[in-house]
Length: 424
Ligand code: FCB
Image (cartoon, rainbow, N blue to C red):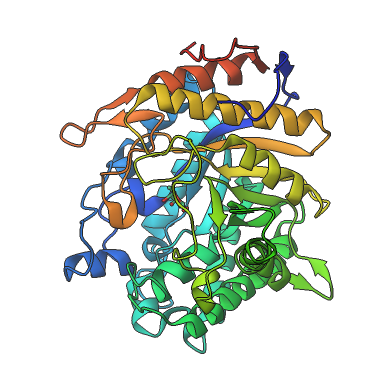
């Protein structure tokens, strides 16, 4: 699996960020004051996060693991519901905790990439109407200000909100995530707009308080292609979907034409192949017009196609925005080590090619450090560089973790004869 063409040895630039991406609810455990926990308790979700990976208590060992495998960066989220468990009441113990977490990263030479909102919200925020409440943006802005004030000095890379299109889709269209609304395209669009407005306010606050900060939102960007490129309606479908799922959020974070972003934070997993079907709005967010098993390709446990050349295509397209790019998520749900190695190798080649073309790519954060609580899929989707044994909570590095370590340490991606993808 490669991103196309023969591959020569490649040297990554000095200072390139290598690491893994995580999110609080998926690994910390006991995220009791969050809307997700509330929904889990009420039986509205198929799985309960419980102690998850117990990262809350094990973060030092986890960061030791990241360092031992050559990482020099780490994406984490600072859980709002811990920091502000009741409206306006900030918990000093939670702020101290995250201060220690950030220190632990720094002590190990791991550059933090901090997310302020990764899908979960405080329970009280959700109960008061969530992102649609009249004061939602003020509430979030006040929270951001408190975090930047207290934890900001050690953080350069910020992510305001994670994947606004994905949250809008699951919460308001497919309805499998809180607040479980189905088919509410109108609200999904409003949510998308609000999350982008929340980003803009956070952007301005962070930059005012910390002028050297680099601020973005993490955008889920699939590579969207027409099923039959010769059919104008398939091409139109692909263009519309790209416009809605990718470009709209970028439009919504503009102010007077200027993008309020210091870099583009790309979460890339797969390609979507789109065929025109006269089903109106399903074309935009829905799965009905997707051709999930198009071509003789390989797929992960979630049915996502392994498509490294899609990453290259996405990077080329994002480069047109004229900003540096950081890959803030990329990974595969599988327990098949050979497939995971092929995935990683292919995507590393895509990075090399992008850099070789002069694209200003600053780093690669793999999703994820170890298997975690994968939202509505629970622990069934295995994205870890290390396997998590959920009985003992032991983390066991997989071959791909060794492969990434070798590249991160040496800064070199050696050529491999085709088909000979092996662990380092
Ligand atoms: C992304 C999410 C992340 C994780 C990966 C697999 O959409 O940002 O939390 O669930 O998918």
